[in-house]
Image (cartoon, rainbow, N blue to C red; front, top):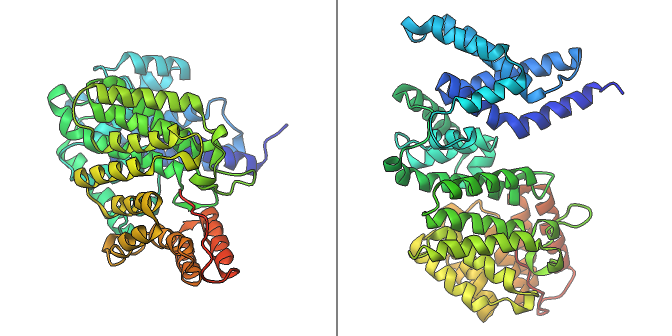
Length: 438
């Protein structure tokens, strides 16, 4: 059956979503400039949008995009006369690679690796996380290149304006190009200062998949899968780094809940309402094993391992009622001391409310209401609404849920929050509500 124009455009979108980071990584290894690599990949995408509806889908769409971008790289290198005395040599090498069949091309690429990283995506992460960039620029650029996230999605992760993120990304590309940062894995002595940014990037990509910032879907499973893949590879490359194992543990346990987090219509199911029989015990087992590896290294648990320990508390509870909330509250206290942030304090307030009552939680949340970083954070009014509802102050809770619905950009989450607001408005004050937690 002949593909329609709509089918082809959907295929283009799917290929780009799945393979853009790999394509950019392959190009960056050739041109040694991540900004240029992204530009070349984008040009290849535009060519696909123009040609595929007319000429039909290629047998290997990702290879077509890579080859098209490589041809453009050859032309660009010739035009710019890069590496003055080596132009012919560079052009011959790229021409030879372009002439190969897709399978031979991939095989030659693997053979050309000159260090033990063995993965273009991780090369791309470590290049974007080079110390020449400020930490916030490293994370923003890598999310853009690796996760394929839009500027607004990244901004939401950082709780800063989109214009700020756009400026960071542009400046980061310019800085990398100006500094001639090589596209390679860091050597042993360079690893430690760059690892923290890499871990943060991987987890932010996972979080965007786990609870999508915007759009019509509650989750973006492909992002979770990619973050897990990168995390597992990274942990294998740095086996003595407890936080790498801690991050893997956290992601595995959280990912185990995926099937239980949405109903048949794709609407969210909050943590305390989930059918725990649908949690993936294989992923939980892998997560607990990764946490044990982090703990076995003997150092104090870092932020990711502490969060993994919190997730493990939920994983060990056969029912929501069996959850060890006092231990979770204690772990959040340790996390707040190690990595203080308003979001950690908000999560700590939820744990305290579950362990010792909603009044204590509300007192903690109210202390955060003037926190600048949380002014546009929809979970602040959402949590406050839940606590008010549990205290029987349902009219106030209704207003908080409405406010939260106005702040979120995810359609599924907005629907859930508006439903909770409606439920509160339909009942009189003084009637406690069942708690709902993410």
